[in-house]
Figure (tube, rainbow, N blue to C red):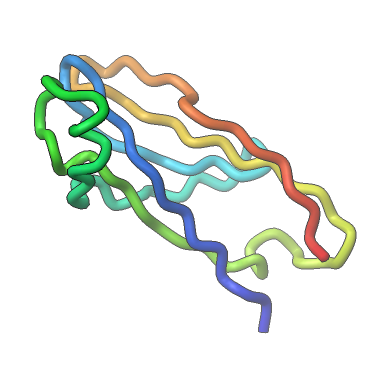
Length: 97
């Protein structure tokens, strides 16, 4: 079976975060769970709403991508604030080995 990819990180906004998604190869959207405790982030960036529950996590299976060695894939993390403004906060490309 193809392995699962685990995604985790953090996001914060001066208006608060409504949701975080991972977008793989511009078509597969994976809703991520938001609100995990990340006191390390708030120690470095204090004063934001919902500190310290600013972490996100989620996972998906490489089988959803037609898993093959040598294939390159792009993943973007999109955060949306409580006003409905969304932006890409991180972007990576990786090759399946």
